[in-house]
Length: 91
Image (cartoon, rainbow, N blue to C red):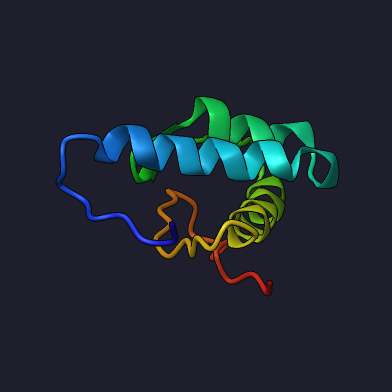
């Protein structure tokens, strides 16, 4: 299966399963912090993660996008209170 209709009753469970499966399949290729973001900081289609430095956040965003692209996910929205544009990362 490659597509799931959202707003159905099992959508939350299916989305969580797909994200965690992607993390588990790629666990040996990414740092623990990136895998941990998927398993502990994601709820449905939102993630809340705080990092101390913009440089760290930029690297984390790049790695998180790279990991989730392995499962066919494309992350698009980022919010930061920093004035620096950390989301301008090349993948």
